[in-house]
Length: 199
Image 1 (spheres, rainbow, N blue to C red):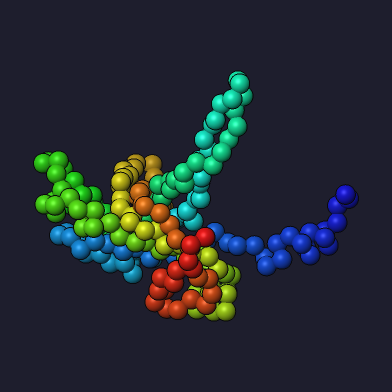
Image 2: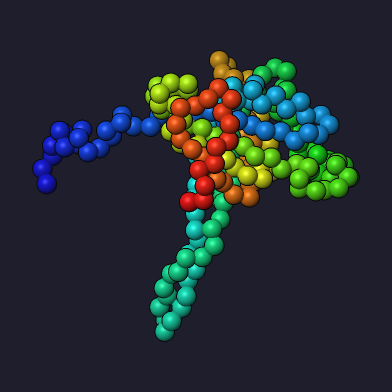
């Protein structure tokens, strides 16, 4: 087939392509000592995230020296965000306090006193917007609810005399139980969780 730019325009990115910079994360925080949990501010300081992966691991079944693959169990890979650090360190303090609530630095036990997952797991939402942006006709074009999420790592912040004209960032990695798709469409200002059902 010869090259034809009109065929590509008619059948390729007919909506102009989704843009990775048009997103927002709605971060929930557990109610625990030392966690201020300013979710609105977090949505401005989370500068990078991902739409979560969907994975079903294969199972190898051997037979006479050959193997066939059958579908195994679904798995949910860890999810990572990149956070801009302000001089008040409030958001980093929240994530550090959250990890300390799960397991304290000194005593190697849960600060909650119970260790109940319900005390430290939350739901987190990530929204992908169309080019018209939040609140306009394009609104939310894809969104996910990460169920039962909690941080497993708050990464180091590199300090370097050679680094100038930049803002500190750090990564936070979360484990979670599973994700659910949410309904796309015009985005209300409160970004409620609207589950699309099982897919």
